[in-house]
Amino acid sequence: MSTMEVKLWNDKREREMFDNFAELFAIIKATERLEKAYVRDIISAQEYELECQKLIAHFKTLASTLKDTVPSIERFADTYKMECPAALNRLVVSGVPATVEHRATAAATASTSAAAVAECVQNFITSMDSLKLNMVAVDQVHPLLSDLYASLNKLTILPPDFEGKIKMKEWIARLSKMGAADELTEQQARQLHFDLESSYNSFMAALPNAGT
Image (cartoon, rainbow, N blue to C red):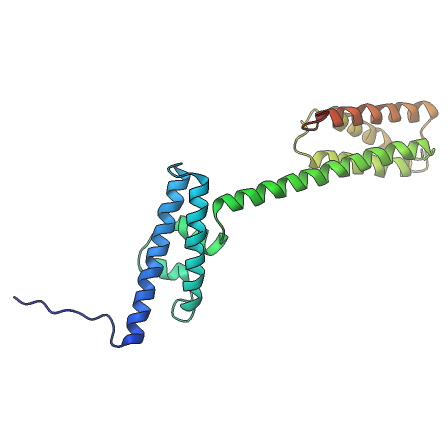
């Protein structure tokens, strides 16, 4: 019994399209295997990043070439029942190797933490300087302590029972019971300044690498 060869294409243009489809299929499958190998620690981060960058570059070039015939990569993968979620995430959603993504996230986190620390320091100093300038009215002190308390709560490296948080919360509650035009007594102002200074010192000591 003779077998008859079934042609997938009728002309050179169709053949090139199917060749591109096959290459796209291979890139997606290879990326899925690479992602799994990296997650399972089968390959080093350096090897993974190098190979992943190559696959992403090939994918971008091919996806651009096929943009008219394959407008949706997800639909392409679904049509051919590929089941490659990690590859689609890396190629379509992320567009960069996981190692690069993680470095960017770490840098962003460090930057955010640095900004939050700077904000806390500024609020501590502003509050202490205001008291030194005899700005002791409730409507002057309350906003400063509220800003300080809010900035301390933004900083995740501080524990919930951090001295500064507790003391500022107590002072805010005390001031809230007073009238806006009321003023702190000399004794209250001295105690608040002492609490601020003590909390500031504890804050600086709590920071990573403080004193190194």
